[in-house]
Length: 455
Length: 109
Image (tube, rainbow over all chains, first blue to last red; front, top):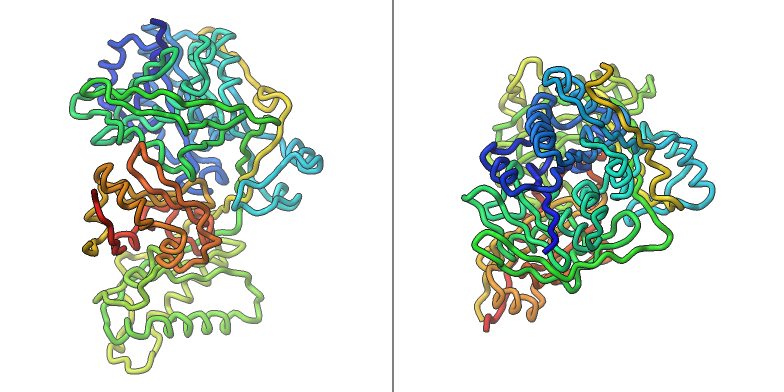
């Protein structure tokens, strides 16, 4: 029986994994080791600012074990969405870590690098040719938004990864990639069914999260056959069950039966999940349905200003009862005090104990807590204006004389000195759209670098 | 048929982003019989979700029954995209709370 085994060490490169689990995976002689390094979950800052949401030392630790194992077993190691967001700066950050390891370990191997950041002009041209459509409920795109984006990435499918593997890459570092792409590319080259390969990749990309108990920092092994695939954890404390695996298929998805991706949809309407052994689950019936035209997802983030926050608490029941009035009065004082300067700013009060977690979705309107946590936040076009607005709102709120006040020494408890924190630039997602392409490879230039030979 | 709170019937009640513009709510029932009873009683539908979250039914994108996981899933439009100014939960992981208080009447067979 033909098999293709893929070892997923962890949910996100840098989240770590127990060496015992990893070794148990290697003992099963995988054909490929793959890891997803990214997500849009941590929000727009990381794509916009060009920094990784994972820690450098933690990423280096995971890569050292993975690449060493790959070289020893002579199997490819594939990393997707390098640096967390997969733009050029993130790719270079991760490449730098690999180069450092190559020097330290004396490794030699061909490295496949796949770029995923698009030239602004490419996006503008596609927009003018009506090749870009919003992903509901994202708003329609405009040229102004494309121009405002700090950087724009496209989400590659498995095709560019297959290309560098065919060119002999032993380690592949890919920019922004559809999560299953890095797990499925090797199996697709070996001729396995695309629906099963992509679905297996969807489960493997979160490491042992699909097991019970779940974990984002432990390994999962996928075994692809001609007519099914099998997933199993490698740590004896975990097992996969039909419910744990099926439940993972729901995770972070709008509709678990129809999952759109680059070039088509994964159709799970006839998928079955069955317990194969104590720890393993067998999955059948998943289908890939190609879409015409071929489309990839674009992601972009733009800078909207600079943020300063001040953190405080309130334990006074007289003040708590009037918190909405006090917030409005502080807003008015801030606006009035700086009216002649024409500052543009966003001033926001997040009130924990009221609706700090759910905002306008919060169904409870009464405050029942004996204390409130308050975050005063200012976002403005410069850090200096944000500091000014936040600092002034903080001092005004501290000494504001609300009706019935008896605690005349101050209204807020600050846990820290300084009380205000400069949070730097703030970004918003402003592109989350589909781009029609003719060639799934054309947007993603590849190169093969000979690591360890001419450094 | 007695009224029960959703946590008495479910092993998982969670919320999470589905991309930066949507919030998806998963309820995984304790077993197949409970899931089927919940489906028959339509305990989670567009109206219940809209009421729980104080939003219009047009902002409830979908309700999906997913038998392989004994799960009912509801997806809504985020009032603010993840990380936007004024937004309160970047990962969307703490927006499930109103479901914990949902009272339902089902008949498990």
